[in-house]
Length: 296
Picture 1 (cartoon, rainbow, N blue to C red):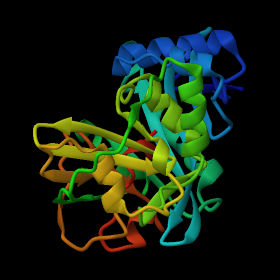
Picture 2 (spheres, rainbow, N blue to C red):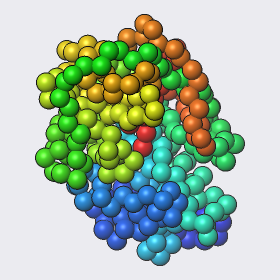
Picture 3 (cartoon, rainbow, N blue to C red):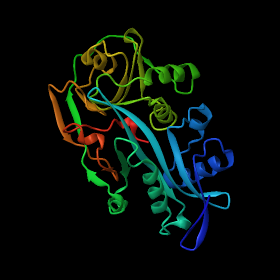
């Protein structure tokens, strides 16, 4: 489909997963815009229909993109379907021409009214851009607590370059986090994306509990981003198995169901603001946190 924006013609296309040439150009723009490479994730073959780029091309080159991610959530036991807008990027030579506006409008045209809500995470530099489409900014809140007792239980650090470990991660992450009030489901494609980039060394397997914990450590603090398991083991035991002996504090990357002893604080992330449209999941509970591993 060809369209004209500011007297210049572009090709507009939705979904590029099976077009190698366009997908390669898309990846080049992502590297220029964000400094990361999708290629390792492409090679895993786990790009599902849940991730839909909306692209504008000049000749054969992707010059702007807005991606739509179809997100399933369990919100306090209630199933919800949300749309997350992300990977918003424009080639430096094509900015301020209305390309992102066109793509956001197309995404909203397709999905507004066909889901339970739409949200995105925007850079601080565009805080005035998204309200033009009906988005409102909102704070997020993070929970932390005193660390439980450390347990002497064998754990294994997953090697995300080993296919057997990736298959285990994919299988376990297909379920929602049973310890979270607000948890992503059918999210394995996005978890695997994280496993190729930002979270490569953060996956811990507890064979005795058949559970995977996503965590890292900063001094005496354990950041627990997500948990994939059946939920039949107490949260204290899960945390105690993975934490270090000198861990004193646990900070959650999700909203825990068990909040006794937890402290709540405003989540401060550099250059990141949550924007939501009507019926956004963050409005379904008082102070939930969008799970860190559900951010596309």
